[in-house]
Length: 562
Image (cartoon, rainbow, N blue to C red; front, side):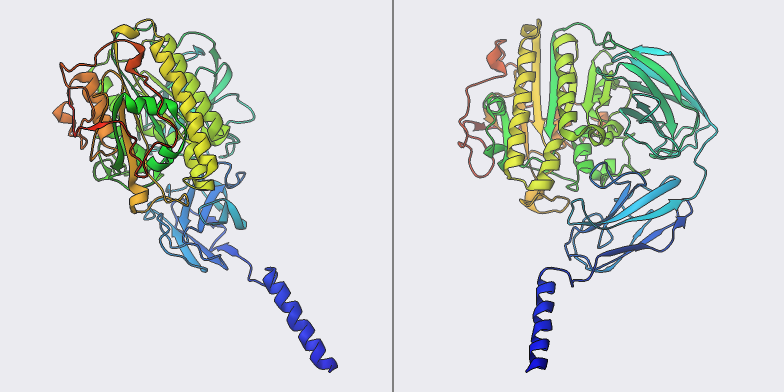
């Protein structure tokens, strides 16, 4: 009896420990080496995972932690950037064939982590390793001036760069406490631009409005933080905002987007300002993406007006084989066709800066990784509000990014996601009011565009090809739109075409864009008055939207081209 009691006791204890998770196998991550040559394949082996399709391996700079900044490279446990099959154990290979990897990684120290289900829960890590190679170039960097006003263009001349497509110049607020050192950056750059693969040449950057004080510019290798040249310090003074001075008449366009907001999430939120734009515009609540449902391809579609087949952006890493030179952004096209058009992009993600060239008139990034995405969104909104109030800006792009972070963390229709959509609606109300308050508003023909880069699953993920992940919306509003109508069969590549058609009257055929101009006012049609009701209308009561994401009160029009 004693032996039976003892056996039962240990059996019961074992079941309790198993239930509590104390006897489950530990999650592990290991690498095949601790030091790699530049460009050498890296093999990561994992075991004991929770068997989710979106469990992943992330590589970070050695002083960075998951969730605080973007990973330098990542792969899901099935070895690709889709995460379409679950594994508890296995291995993945980081190399030039991995489409979601920025490659090669620049020289320096790194840390890798085994992470759970597309989130930042650490299963194992950090695993430390090093990429060997020179961490210092022998180039030169000079600036055209030692001090600049806020918003003014900085022109930097460089020599002796390695000639990589993703060599770049970044600006940090102070020479200490944030700028790169020994291939590591404490904080992300506030503004940046690429050398476009030149060995010798120039780079230009526009300084943001809240950028006063002492700063440092550095020329760096391969989208990393290893120096090519000695850093250069300079001063930013409070003052004028480049050449965008004084409000003026004519055609104008403001293109805004909320990252990863599915139309039914937009419909569920209480958004009186967006509702007013829909009521006084042309709307499609059942539009679809053409490219992979990652942010990189989606934003590239929105900005260029062509699909992945042309711009070749397939993931959230802008690698050497992308083709944004031949397929530039709609802002760059406007600038090329008519240099008198004042163009501006204010964003929080460096991939947007990479897709919008430094040739436009005002190009600013408030880094969401460094500031927090909600803070970056607010700063971007305030910059655009200043441009709308005080300058003769003609064409603006403004993305809001925090919606995507909340969708991943909480779900597409979660309270946190919906509440932030309502916050952005308040920002949009401020911007519309600022437009209507311009001294030259009566002589201006405004078109306001709104969309999103991709849909998502209800759980919050995206990257696949399901209808939910491809489900987006198209909105064109204001005096330049076919007010009170709806459009059908819209796509993300239609935004750039629509903006260009509004500004120029048509889209020059030589650009060979994939999109169709949609929702524009037909020439000679009514609805060209100049009162504030051109942009705002009666409030559509919350909850009045239908389940399909299409808001009510509109008639259907397929295309309304100028």
